Picture: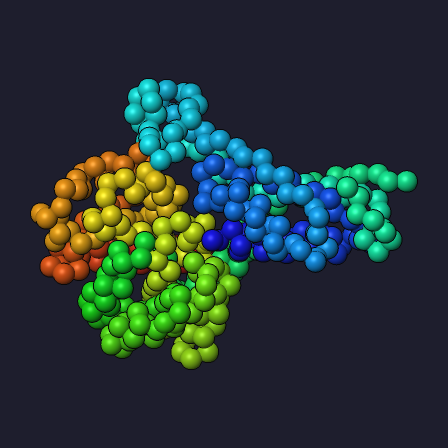
Length: 127
Length: 233
């Protein structure tokens, strides 16, 4: 379950950004890009996020995960293809090995959504 | 008035781990140490391989081991018999070593010994085919092990580990005659996603292939020494 560690890393990074904001905004959402060719399972990440943000500055924030497909570029055929993860990675046309991964290795915090109400002044959660 | 805003971050989730790994590597480079991250599923033979490696290569190089074990020192005790420093890191419930844990190990090495005397640090990761592949620890090369009993399909199912490896050892080759596993198919499956990896079939029990593995280690140490020399000049 390394998603727990991934979530910890995510919270640390967002907390750093948040603490640098003078108004300490209420964060309502975090947008991630997670490639399909990584060891991260989005469902586990969602679960870990919910558990680990309880009673923190991120309580109630939604985690939006955008998955990106595995796309490789075959230099021999000069074209992109989508390897079938778990089954076949070589180019389906010429069988050259997968060497140039163009998408699918992303593990990125893209953006944070926040409202103008600061954590200190908001009386009700902004749902 | 209630308004919603967006802030673009664009930061890698593993940014902090990566920074720690780069910092560890700087220490290794400064001390002239080459570091390998040795990874496999549990029971593939990492410790047996390290035992054989220490038995031979301690005659040529000064070696230390950083040993990741979930809760025990059993593996570390096996390796201490070879009179090398073995720094055990109990990873608790974590299923992989990260750069911070290895940093703790490096600092213990530096406090208890003169780190500049060492040539090679072998990091034995926690047995797991999934997580360790995503967490760099500051290594110069990744060494993956796959025991022949695990079957041909594992590189296809756990591709990240095999795609990242610089050297793959197919272990327990002495069992090959008793199994319906095709070594050539394992090799072909790995080559689909990592055409340049060095693949060496070995057996710690019979010694098959170990000399080729030792030569690979030697070649990495020579390369790394050359790189460090080119930094100095």
